[in-house]
Image (cartoon, rainbow, N blue to C red):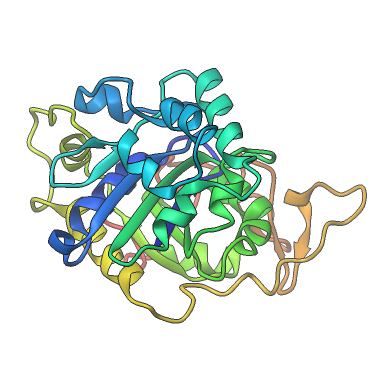
Length: 308
């Protein structure tokens, strides 16, 4: 099984999520789990977990010129805590992009999707930010499930709205995953026109542990393992051979010549505004931002998102 994880803006925790899913995957003891850093901007896992730069993505790209045996992928992985393996990318974007381009343009396609077809194998492809033309797109398009990770502030949602329709067509099983504080989930679902498959809490201590960092010394609010618990729930959802996680946004209109994608009016009077203002009804003026946690919204207490 191949699960592609990506974002469209910033760093909302795609790498952390990939590691968390690998560590909490159901029946992990009987599965071969691979976290593959295919982010064209470079990787973080080697630095975070104290791993050498090679073997990894660059050495695999070199080997792929000599053989197309999918088993060669495992020869270029390293061990992560918990029994998963990692295909690490170099920290520099130049080398990572070159290696990815080599793998993506192979005559018979990338090797990672072939590896993921083996029974008992699950590959978590950390595609990073999938800008148009990203060499990671060839891998993401082969995924059994694609998880788009976005923040829930207004500018995050505007960027997501501009690419949501396109990304949803890459895979038969797209999913929208929210992170952190911001607009309530119900508001995001209404404005974007698609349901979310979950929301990861702001849990810096758990995130640090999952990515090889030292947890903050200050005691975090809430119970222990908020992020791990949410990741485990998401892993169970993804592991089930179920119906598509979320349908492609049927209400997303085609581009309008001369009109920026983020200014397109959608059915129901919803207007996706430029970054910084956030989505709002077309009939109402842009909200005045009073509290950055709410982006000018004053959600009801029933819909307020809580940190774990």
